[in-house]
Image (cartoon, rainbow, N blue to C red; front, side, top):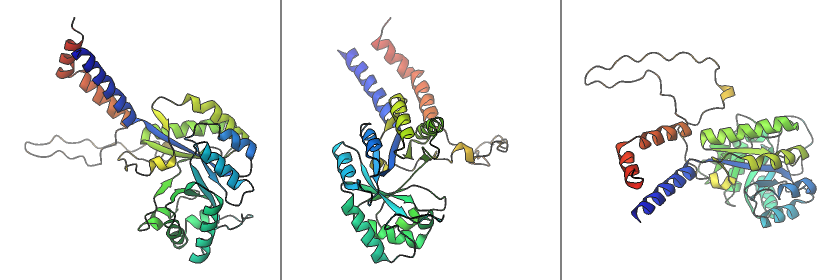
Length: 309
């Protein structure tokens, strides 16, 4: 009886460790409301896949209702002004709009997209890079308890700064799945999102209901590694800021300068590195901890009691 209890406790511990250390991947499919055929295929995917609905699209309300009924999280995909000159959707937010006008657009969008719990930007580089404009947006969102998912169409986005003091939580996109509609490129971006979720603990990827994207997701979602779980964006709202968050590898120097040697510490003195210690990946830290526990005297004694020779 004692052996069975010990084994169950050990298995429970392993399962608990797996859930704690799993990478969380959120996938949001934008531009819902225009392509019912492809959008219905997305709604056949796991409910953790979320959808962002354009409020003035012809099928906006119908697809938002259908997505909610299928268990998918719904966001408002609100048009915001880009830096480039191009035709704009109706009620596109612009930095020079008054607070009253932004309130009206947000209010009508909430009414047109039922069940929405968050909002992200459609295009929007000119708007999201304007602190003054985004402060008005965040003040408006605060009245609806919506989170803001920044699509990060521009690196100088002011969304986090603008949200301070409003109670609006900001999330950020890490990967665009389908800037290219080439299936090989989409698979590469999907793999990159998975790797970021494993390395950093969580990642958000955004795609669109293109036929190529739908096919890649249908092929690759069933092959997710055991250490990665699909989540809704709202499940990342309370994620702690992890100490090992770093820019993607592509932004790091390929040949970092060598670290200076650390001189031996004298008696009674604290040894300090002249540079910050490099962060250790979660998975590697877990491996070291597991190996250490496995080889400990306590673990050896426990194995001998459970499985005597």
